[in-house]
Image (cartoon, rainbow, N blue to C red; front, side):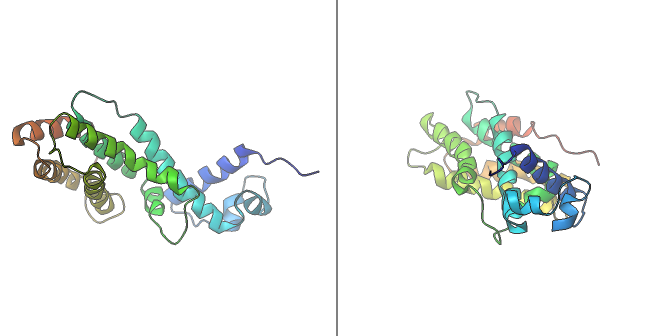
Length: 207
């Protein structure tokens, strides 16, 4: 009789691997199951081996990002909302720096590419709303501007979450986003106000 896989075991191993990344412990076949009461066979049963674990970790990074995006409320100001999504992106990277790094490790495939791609859709929708209310030019391509916004967020996150610069570097995001959105057609005064309001939702870590 084939035993049914327990999803809780899979979750436990993914969470353990994420914790090990955070504490800078080497993630190996044996270290992953050490102290769990499971044998190394569990890694093969649930992931097909360590490569499957890394795939799952990449996916977990996007899953957590999607969950963070889902907490961003929709207001009457879509430019503010787009900024708040950028802030959520940065917050997720700061909270899970090692998992964030694994998210973009192209050496391993994603378990569900469509699900990961769907995270960008949050920004696409905010850009689309900005165009609909006349904040962005009528010919604006929501996907293009969303990708540009994501690029700003990723650049800042990479420099701070796993890079050489302090968290204070993130403050440059206000000027970068303001310039991007004005270039997309937004009124300079309204734009600055919206970006600053959205940016206030970023809570930098102490120190």
